Image (cartoon, rainbow, N blue to C red; front, top):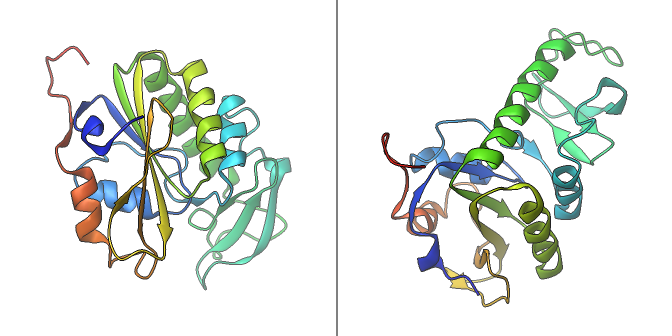
Length: 214
């Protein structure tokens, strides 16, 4: 059973696994996001789909044949669904240079994700201690995530699973998983109101200094 205290220390990589942009935003605010991850700015509402994506090592992810325009995310951006893994892009395809069903900017977008995926998999193979953060997921899905990551992350890793629920503050859960710490935080102010709690969650977590064996 992993506790918050067990997450403290230095990491060779820290990655968001969705489900919204919240984890990536908080990592950036707390100085733990020097590198972009594949899922940072996407919506991945079902952790089971993310588990399948990881189990497949991102095979086929963001292939053109998998993309469907669902509508507009804003006046400037389209909401595009990656249908193979049920993951949504709302920060990649701008309205001024894409013309559904033709996504003219696709080559640049795909190249960006390919770079991020390649770096993610390289870190999984070489990083001596990696932290993954996921917002949203059941205990069963968390157990599946631990099993999937154990199959391709070569060295030590930890997972912080954050669920937004109707609680008044930070609640640490007790789940029988060796590498996953689960917490609940308030769902009233997901985007900004929980800044203090996120700072508490991420306190004493750092990137390893150069020259260390990470």
